[in-house]
Image (cartoon, rainbow, N blue to C red; front, side, top):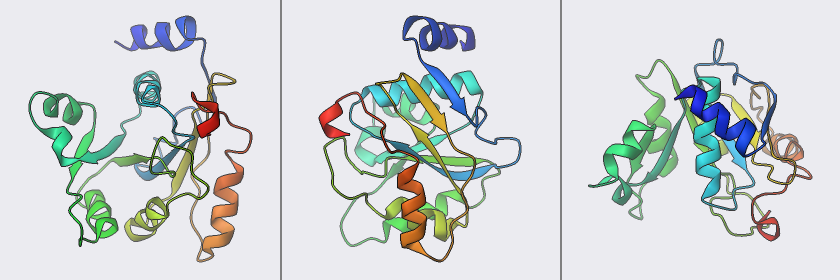
Length: 182
């Protein structure tokens, strides 16, 4: 399967990997991975190819309704975890708890929180990383240059504004599958 993923990703789609090509997986077993810009369902498949090629175990969350038959088995098999999105819950705490008891857990999230155009990122990913006490690894979904640029782990400080400035600067000039939503 890895050979097929490489064939599709590199040869057929023409993508490349830049930067931290193994997501620091030998030294960082737990992290929040932020992927941006998230503009299309195609991002999911690029992420799956990238994961297979690099051999990096990653996870994602989705609304619990996605994890019922017939798709539930597939989503769990590719690292998905269901989340109850009922109002009135502390979702940051609930998601941060997913890291507990896991030897290896890298949670991939879109900081925009949607595939639509947004002016400001959501902050949940930041507080999940803070609560779980894990670094953030950034990776681009750059359809213009057909590349995934991957950062070294970034350890958050106690200055949210400074952290966001650094995090957002990593994605400057990156264009998603649907450019107006980037």
